[in-house]
Amino acid sequence: MSDTANAIPAIDPFSLFDTWFVEARESEPNDPNAMALATATPGGAPSVRMVLLKGHDDRGFVFYTNAQSRKGGEILANPQAALLFHWKSLRRQIRIEGPLEEVSEEEADAYFHSRPFVSQVGSAASDQSRPLDNRATYDARVSELRAAYEGDGEVPRPPHWTGFRLSPMAMEFWLDRPNRLHERRRFSRAAQEAAWTSNLLYP
Image 1 (cartoon, one colour):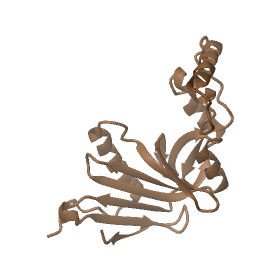
Image 2 (cartoon, one colour):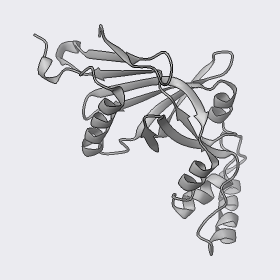
Image 3 (cartoon, helix red, strand yellow):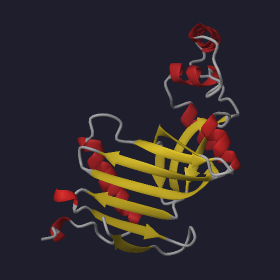
Image 4 (cartoon, helix red, strand yellow):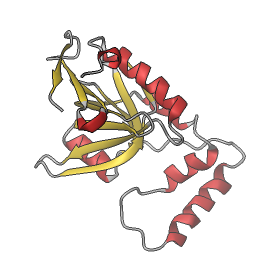
């Protein structure tokens, strides 16, 4: 018999995400804002990695990265992506798909300078995803930047360090059920301002 008392409701998906995210923050022992980010080259070759959600509202879901990294290059060349949240403690998943756009310089500056000083230094010192001859080279660059900006407590944001916002066109909520009789509800819309429609999917 299905458990309708705990069914995934057909409500605004942003509100449903907020509810599940609050519960994840209370139950997940580490990084409840961790999400898998899948990107692809213009030719369709995929890649995926874990990143951290750093903001969300009705406009979409924001993360930050080095735009000269592998994922940054793929995003700039093919600005479509998919996100996956998996909260093992709650036995829930959320999949989110849609186009990406770069955040404003003001947003990027504000977040970059909200980070711990050493994190700012580490990002500025890193040629992310590029070959590194040995760890000492990176450590030396970090030390040089720390010495240069220690008194300021703030590092200038590199122009290639920025954020991206995924504006969802589809959001799918997955809920674990006994005996693998899981529940899935998919929300979709034709355009960013369009109304959401939803339907259940076979597990």
